[in-house]
Length: 299
Image (cartoon, rainbow, N blue to C red; front, side, top):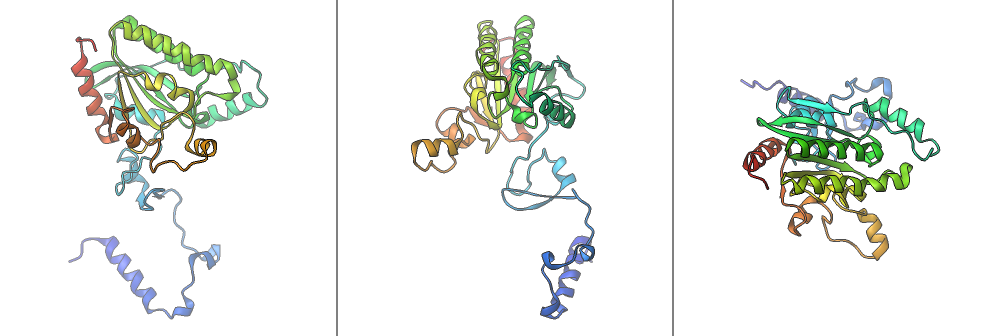
């Protein structure tokens, strides 16, 4: 007895279509809207990598990964925190900190308000204190949906405060990067954050404390040129775009075709820029192991 109802339905439908005369079988694009089957929106998600159709609910329970090719769909900041930290063991810092538009950039305030409304966040990073496999840690996670995770004054300030607090408490720091670079609407103020955060990291390092970065897709621009690549241990998700200028900009500049997979995490690991590539389902256990190995021993 066939216990799979989906298989039997699929067979029944295909049998009906085979039995129809060829001339009445129309492509879906030629069928009037009112005659098309009513399929609820959002029930299926198509993988942009392999084209596999995935039940959205199944995707949500699989770390937002394609179960066929392992493609990583975007994770929101709070989704990532939920799968990385122990349940109920995360305390957020500086949640209300918000930029004041330092350059009065045209249209910036309106875009900020729209982005805040869509994401429910005040800016592009969440920082706080939590536990991973029982190990206390300071954690920062960047949000790619907030101005593409671009680094402005608030991101720099929140990260600096996080490292300073970690230094005071003698705790390691883990930062998940996701950024298009410095935020152009804040000009030189955004670029200053590169040095500001790097200085806080240096003091944290001088105290003999561990700093781990996890590079996610994409990590580019001024973030790559500063705190993303300053980790004592640098991890990356599979297939993540990591670099300073994007590949199209580089190709246009040098007038040459770049190697296959250039600036992807696998390419960077092969060339010594990344220590290890870790899939999402292994991230928590990997970070927990790293924290336990370095607990009370220094780097």
